Length: 318
Image 1 (tube, rainbow, N blue to C red):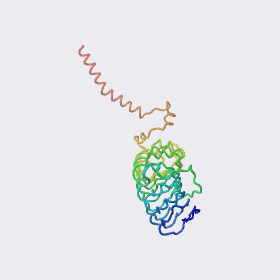
Image 2: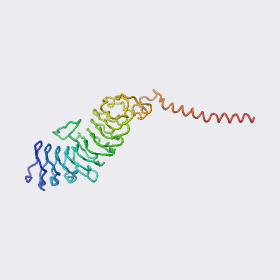
Image 3: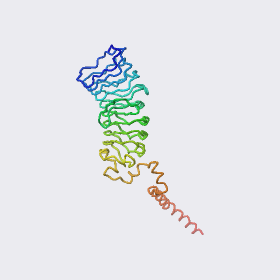
């Protein structure tokens, strides 16, 4: 590690064992360190923080057992961070918004034991190398390709509404965690989103029409094995997905599910802006009209006899 000219160290896909030695010095000139697919264990070397020029750090598919490496947060050149398939644990993120790696484009932390996800993590441009369950090797980092993969961990709590701030998000994977609460409506702002996998969590509530209406480029979605309810929006791409992508949600109804929706389930989702204006003047809202008729009918039952009684009294006095 003393050679200042050593910029790339690629030991990928070997049978290396032991731990990553804590031997990196202040004159470290490494730009790429790739140790993926070995049998390394122990903790990540803290002396890596001395490699200020490091742009790519890939230690995926090993047996590293450590916490999220906040001690590397001063490596401002870091663009790729792959921790996939190790034994990392604890919370993800470091104190302060945008406190780590301002140039980070690839962040793959899937298949670990992380438990807590801080909101400010979403403010970073991050991308993973896995889509649709298949690994992808990126020959060139594309700044327009942004993806977030926190799948197969132990994350709990709601999905942050701030996810809608990542306007260029392309792939969003949170499957096999314990996320709760509703699917954020802010996801509907991610107009470039191509693949969405929220399967095998504990999400509740309905699939909002605003969500389906905003994801105009979505081609892959998996919402199976949650606790979602009510009618599936039948607009745009959501009208083309298969039933298997909604399996394990006993409360869902409507196409492509076999179960039909009840009257209340049909009324659960508000119409989109386009539907509201395209049908204006051409259709009658019979649900609304029936409510009005019930009100008038009830009003007549209560007030009518009183008016009749008053008139009868006046007639008798005459």
